[in-house]
Length: 121
Image (spheres, rainbow, N blue to C red):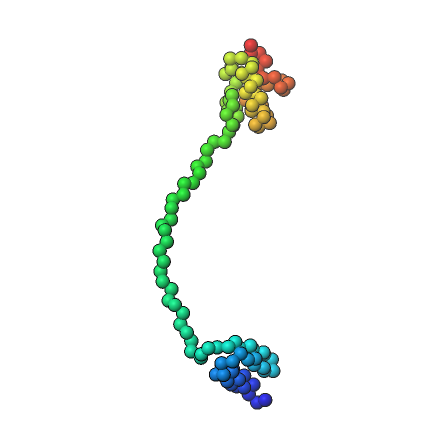
């Protein structure tokens, strides 16, 4: 076979002109051609513009403080025993902050026994 590319091209051309489903064989390639109704390229419909609804403004959540309400703030050392009228109020603050932070943030328990402001009534 002197010109295999020419033979393959000629075979494809003949197969298309016959308008039949066929298989073309060459030494390295097998091509399956489907039945083609005609040899002309058919243009597809031109896309048309479509309208879409304008985007809506979606409200975004804002950051808010997430510290649980309690008898006192626990983010910094802001209270002393003198800020409380009774030991029970100081203890409530101590217990609340201990539960949130795991430490005596206001230093209300001077001897570390778990009892805040022992000198208060």
